[in-house]
Length: 185
Image (cartoon, rainbow, N blue to C red; front, side, top):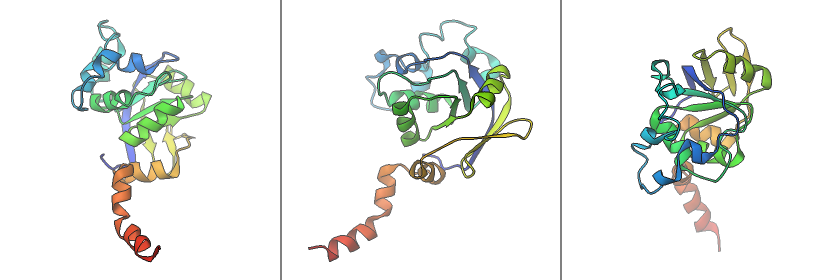
């Protein structure tokens, strides 16, 4: 994972509620064993429409997706955050994000940002707005300088800011584990 503390980007707005993981990455793309190239299949069934938001030139280079309510619902599918990351997104912003999706997201380096209804509404109504996701402060900084706070588990935040996953964290504890094991009977 790539470490970061802040992301500043224009937003891409997908104003659809209840986007489930099968819409994010359809099941027919789950047979692969690598994350590379999954971005090409992101929202595959919707990308047939040339007017779909990710097909528009203004989506190019955006690393923050603003989604409708209840984003990532449905089955547990690690391929969903993999596809979003491979496409270039580093954060998903909504007023509500499904718990299983949030857990899969942070374990893979994608920041799930849940903001209050007012900030969410502003972002939905202003596609392309430039915002900053500040992991250190757990704030989404809006274009006018205002900010919306978001919650993120402390361990997940630590891993994201240091570019490590759970296994990397455990491997960093090797000395402490060895010390403990040597004093245990």
